[in-house]
Image 1: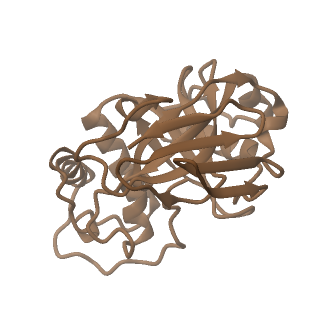
Image 2: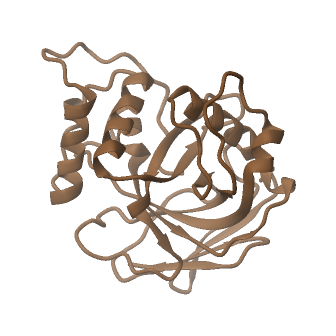
Length: 264
């Protein structure tokens, strides 16, 4: 999963308050014209403000096609971001043009929901979330940024910028089994053209992805959105992020799932 934030530290007070809507507009302009903005312009001082900017961003650019969720390790609080439906692409797609600068690629395991998990008065359990999952599928998340200083930006700014999400290439689904909620022994390979650039076994930062999905369901409920049937939830990188050059074919291989490729 791209750009998980560092532990947050307070930012210095800004001279003038920027609303989440104004911050989202700045990020939207960066998406449209490719000119990045400084992270300080967003004035996101914590997770609540960052999530508010996320909500304003998706309200402006279109419907939610899925979510990304992850954590830096077991016992750490997860973070998440909604994924614009327009950024979901089938395997075999070519991602070219001015929108793709970083081309940071990660191999991940995702889940498609078959039923809604709407807001309600009590929390969802892991078992209830499992019942809502329809299928498991390989994905390649592509990292991009709207921030000029993304390498040095505060964690809340990265979170506001949808955790540096650029796009999600979606592979062939397989029938869901509860065993997929534990990625402790998952094997993943990423190739650039014919070269293996990553080969990992059990290196997911938070292998209990069932816990991540349960956290996300309750987090979205608290945001008043809920999760919806058809949405895809991707659960963090199995390989780490590697940067592809223009003209590269990126291939993802996850044990037990069909291979997936995209082209830059």
